Image (cartoon, rainbow, N blue to C red; front, side, top):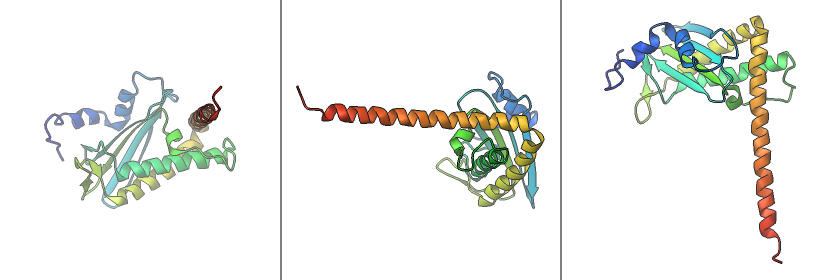
Length: 202
């Protein structure tokens, strides 16, 4: 498919020149990566295929760019949902396995994606685009495909690269603690202002 919407004609070609691995490197070029290599995974089922490239940096924002049949899907959709679910589950499962996370400790999806740059690309025969601007992928089988593929490949990657896995999980733990501390601080401020306004004049 070719995206012929005005202003978008060039966009997808630029991204795909060296594949999605290089695109992640390009997106992270002004940042400091937490691990030198871009993690790349791909898998296929029947007439659909999915590939993901990802790399963490020491920043706090999350950059996720996704495509379906080479069309940019800025509203995300099922392929992004599958990826997010698998990433969170894999980090929690591996973190518990190596005892970096306690049994009752869990890092949230948001914490797992802090400092993450990821590019997701799926190919499928009957892509259904939804949302107001028709830029959200609605095929639910893509969620299952991406989820299964990333769950399996990421666990294998973690087993083979325990140091990288540890670095990523520690980053997510730091994000979780910072979020928890911010929440406590907000509650304290609220409580304090409630007490102040309740105190009697004079």
